[in-house]
Length: 189
Image (cartoon, rainbow, N blue to C red):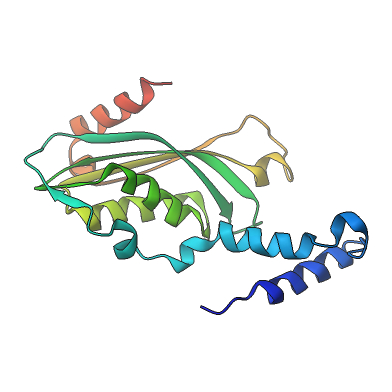
């Protein structure tokens, strides 16, 4: 991957200038370059693969009950306004012979969160990735987030939250499994 920092920085310079600012003034001299590097970091998920990220951390196990990882913080950018949405992700799965190393759940969330998208797509991508990697009998993912595009502009509603969920396999087929998952995550608030 070629380094595109200079090209991205030149676009930020142009945007800042078009907004009426002087990028030669002291406080803004390095801003286009800093903004370019920040955007590259915030979208680094495009340059990561699930296989490299998991790095073989799938282990055989007799565990066949629900495994739940809660409150994985996430930071992403909405594809409509490129403004942040910030929240947490809860992931549950029912193993079918394999379990995933605990830290890999956070890494999967980060990889997909560091892309431009809507929250609904992020939720589905995380669920499908966990399903793909583990071969689980079921996966449930809930993402709760606040969106700056809703808070800082437009309707400017400061207390709004969005919750999205994706249920695969047993979490979709079994009301009891889905209910257990949702009760477990709601009991910690």
